[in-house]
Length: 116
Image (tube, rainbow, N blue to C red; front, side):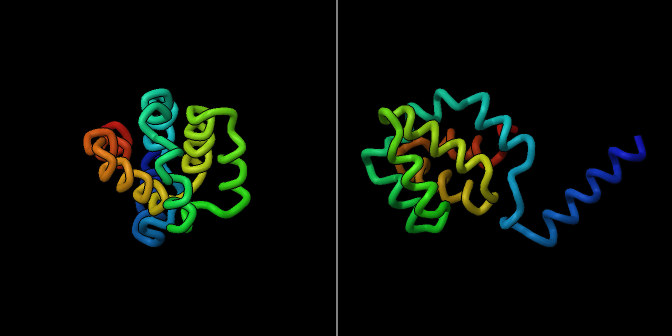
């Protein structure tokens, strides 16, 4: 039990110190995995989301190329989710903002809360 409380304390220290430049927590990553299909269906790469996230420095040019070489729109969205899952909370917020703007405010809110 002592180790768990120390872990939580350490994570809270990371949150406080790094703010949104910290990695996603387990809840965020799990939410992306559990709701991957729903997210991939609403993320439409044809509408410029890849370019928007690239210009917002959510990922680099290599990531962008990897996403754009997907077989179809679903595969591209899936690749985008894989990359965002390994990025920061700040980058996740950028995706959530675009989802909210595109008419999916509930999904964007759940994404930011990690399914809570």
